Length: 165
Image (cartoon, rainbow, N blue to C red; front, side, top):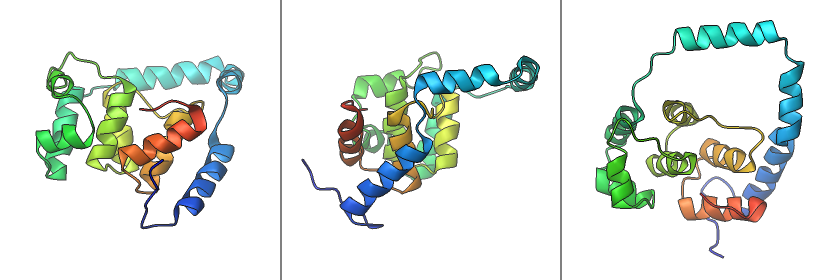
């Protein structure tokens, strides 16, 4: 296993902080669904009506290229740092293409986006961070703590979920 490197704290402190974060924020799917059922249906309906009636968004590809331009990276640098195949990256130029959440996570990490911009790019792809997903929480935690190395993030994800992005 590759040793974790961070300028903010040593790897053991970082992992301990991650465990506290997961304990605090992770909600198993069943619990999250039970909490949603408790919401009043009228409040939920009003939220959805407001959200969709004013929901005008640009395609994911435009948002992605906006963030690439802001980063100062080239397309090649971006897909290599994100460890994404060139063919997949070229599909992202198509406004009709819908990337996987894992692909969006890889791009967020490669571009070293802030949590605000990460949420925006996820939203453009039709996703959001979920408290019922440890993968989502680990990626969110790493972004908040400025840990953008995909290999290191995948090691943390695998350690807690036996999955990778």
